[in-house]
Length: 122
Image (cartoon, rainbow, N blue to C red; front, side, top):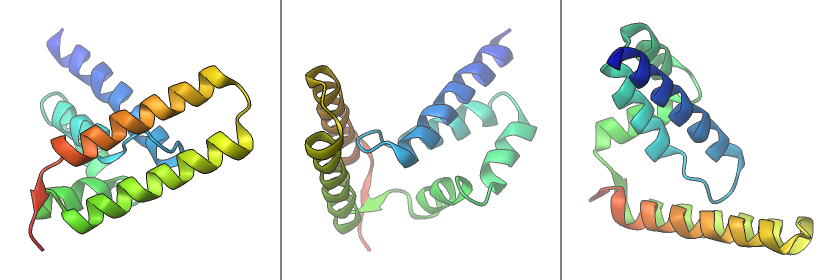
């Protein structure tokens, strides 16, 4: 039963991580790392699929080999995320509630990227 729960949670995390590639403000790497962690405990086949995937596997491999992100990369990622949020908010989104949700997601992404993702030296 635990194995099935871990697979379901890993799949939800995978969906959020992939969505984060396209949605500004939603972090990608932490969700993909969570996916890998859940899959490694539940399914070798799914874990290997994620690691060997040519698009999302690179996020996990880079993070695992380096152990985190450099300060410069974190700043660039957060800056780029807020540029995309600003463009979306000012030019494409009309509804105040959606703008607030997007800003909240950006804040969460900034906190995760800035404080929860380990910082490494180059």
